[in-house]
Image 1 (cartoon, helix red, strand yellow):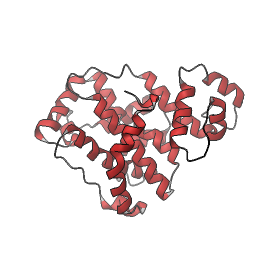
Image 2 (cartoon, rainbow, N blue to C red):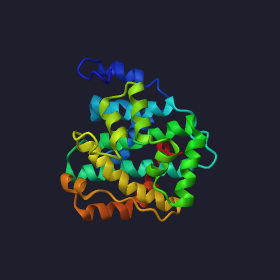
Image 3 (spheres, rainbow, N blue to C red):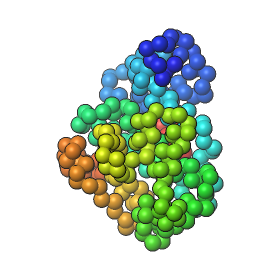
Length: 259
């Protein structure tokens, strides 16, 4: 129904959504966290009527994906899931703040995409835990950047490619697959849109935050070309970087972001 928003019955769709565990609280909490309106959304119907079908679809997709995956602990022995999840939240927050400032894409949608942009890591955690542990060790002990470590351990493959594959296998919207697949390489095919570029910049900011959580000296440097193309002020990037830790801690207190 949500994939065809002009052909569905709103009341019937909401009734079906009530059958998904905790989806009502997920949608209302995300909306109440992000909105600047002087009101609170208390019911699923209230939130859906405000968001519309397209934005509701984005939140529902992210929420349902969580149910497609096993428990949060995964199978790795060394990899720190909780710190990694903070990076995902940080990317969501940074992308939302950039989109809010420059107005080139839907800030609610990109916030949701930020939560699943690294789904390839989750696939590794579930399917190839020993490989992910080896990648993590190379990050911690050798100070190697995650992408470089992945290419060494996985024979040239990265979590981005794995994530894009799983998105397409599950039949998710192509714009999600592109964000997941190209958020580390926004110029790879010469035609990536603004959302991919914003996610690249947000992920870069949040990756530095993540490296600080790991206690490494690694710094991820983004390309100035992206910043210039998006017309993002350096002052904004600095502000986000300085306040990201506080914002992540704030968001982590919302139940659907708990890990």
